[in-house]
Length: 478
Image 1 (cartoon, rainbow, N blue to C red):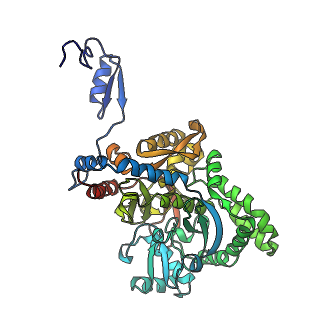
Image 2 (image 1 turned 135 degrees about the horizontal axis):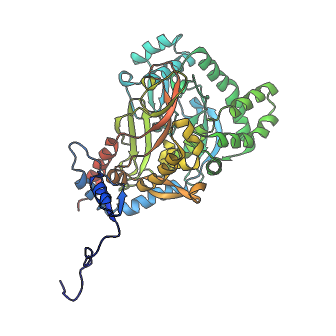
């Protein structure tokens, strides 16, 4: 060392420190505070751990991947650029090619033996709806015997809220990405309470679904075809300015959609009683627009898929038993772990013992940078999920720590119109130990129950360390 040049830290301890930065347990901070030393605590935690995996070595290998920086920029750039237009409403048999006896469901693949109560209930109800069984009990026997088939929505360019069950006669929204040309699909939202997506299958549930297929779907189809493509991404951008976060709160988005379609609904020539019931059904269901937000987010995340070397998460989904993620640089492979039970508020007399573990494809909203990631835009949502305004602000700010970009389209007014944190990076999650925050509904654990509450949940940490291991294996030799 050149003796004429002071070392960079020379003199650091020559006088009293302006403040001491501390992390972890408060023992040191408490001792310094007691001695009148200024302390600056920081929220630091060690990287995630995983049995059988040298996490630091895997992190080093992924971070040293020469493809990573450009690959992540490409993937998140595609995600941010993707558009979303509602172009049609069609039966699932026609739009998705679903054949009789075949269903779609939320989350990663799952066998009947491992299926959760709400997923079983939704499949049983769908089998009765399709005339494949006379009763839910007969449907259950057929499902258990393997008489019918079911696959993840994500394997068919679709997403489904909660159980996410789609059957051939159900109608689906069809969205197109005008930038990349992708297509995405989602069923029509049934409302809250005792509905199929929460695993309920009573007569009122099936009667509502039959009306949606016979009346609501064709009415919406006529309106969408007459009104032209509806720019869903533009509505999502506006709803964030109006107090929605796009997952558990979609009130403004639902009303803006109705404003777009109502003139064409009225002019479509259908009986006025049908139009009035359809308008009342949509406007009275604050979650109706969720089933358009989800495929809009699916288009964005699908655009970011299949970029070798990228550690960007492109799907988070749950089937009520397992939580799974997919990553841009690892193709269609699922990384799964046990789904967690959400914490939040319960309806009526329901309590934590009644709640099923996390379920649904709706975490696609968080994957694309809204939902729980945009909670600061929707302080009213905290009354529905059991938090407070400070939690909403802190949650959005914390998500910037694990994401690659900020959305130029989706902005948060209370944060000075800062773009929402977008593009979950596996390496940042593992390095910081900060897990993505998800707003979610809660389904009853027992098939047929329906919704029991709403709350907050995070993924199991192991899905990110498993993805990190796969990225490390795929990285070129140093």
